[in-house]
Image (cartoon, rainbow, N blue to C red):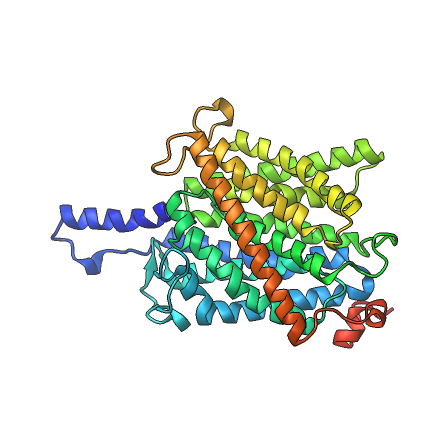
Amino acid sequence: MQIKNMIKPAFLLALVCGLFPQISMAEEAVIDGADTAWIMTSTALVLFMTLPGLALFYGGLVRSKNVLSILMQCFAIAGVSSILWFVVGYSLAFGEGNAWIGDFSKVMLAGVSRESAVGSIPESLFMMFQMTFAIITPALIIGGFAERIKFSAMLLFSAIWLLAVYVPVTHWVWGGGWLGQMGLYDFAGGTVVHITAGVAALVAAIVIGPRRGFPETAMTPHNMTMTVAGAGMLWVGWFGFNGGSALVAGGDASMAMLVTHISAAAGAMTWLVIEWVRFGKPSALGAATGMVAGLGTITPASGFVGPGGALIIGLLAGGVCFTATMYLKRVLKIDDSLDVFPVHGVGGILGTLLAGVLSATSLGVFSGYGFADGIESMGEQVGVQLTGVVATVTFTAIVTYIILKLVDAVVGLRVTEDEEIEGLDIVLHDERGYDL
């Protein structure tokens, strides 16, 4: 989602008009058909990541008595996030505003017409593409408190969190805010999506507390077929997530897709091999989780590193995120049910920092495509990346904690012990995922 790619078409248009004043503005096509077709495809791919990709991935990981509740939460978040993004979220994220937050100039898409353009694509399409990111980010968080939260609490939390956390951070990084002005490299959401979702999931897991029986009782996934199918959908959808963030069809998008695939493959194989060595057998769950770790870690760097750098990122993602997962559950005994923080949070942090290193042009086969404008050294770029990480982690943790306490005071966060034992499918939705 780089501003420089958005500016190029407008600059070329001005240049052409200046050199050839006889060409009327009416004859100039600002919106490019190829770019528009690619971002339309990418938008569908990113929505596909949540519905059905993430829904199935998460749904298979919980116990059978809670599978429907996870699917329901993903669908509900898609609905409420879409409405909030349309009404006010897009305006606050991408309105001019100031360094910290946008304004209300585009509330209900005021001023956005069929002809309105962002770079070479319609603004309505840019808004829709960004909407799919606003959908999947709060949906990722539900893995931190799966199998024990009230549906009403989940819905209220997700709505408030979207506006209070996701929207401001989006403006900081992509909407002309202070982190973007500093030169932060976050191509497709290392800070905006993965760090915010991962940190929020960790805070929620701590505030709400562990599931009944954790960690003594094994809570194994009930349907790994569903999980692997969902993981495959995430892998495919991520091409739109990262490749679409170029906002044009061309070399930037295709390279982002390539490095995304390489990192995903390296992450999956690294996690698989570690399990094989440590436990004697590789698991489908490990391969799928390692793949997601590789995808999340390459996300912020996908527009700035080459294939060699992507291989390094994927290998590190598999090892670091595996270690973080074991440490969080076995040492700290924090019940982040579906490993959102160690995979997405840690992966987002790692990838954001590595973007500052592997974007350097002096690393041979591991070289990237250079530092941000005005930044001349790796140390300076890494310093900016670290600032972005610290700011995002701190802001997200504090505001998420406040939101959770507010929601707890209003509707209560957690179901009762008896309801948790019975399962959320029946208790909250009066339906069963399986009726055998």
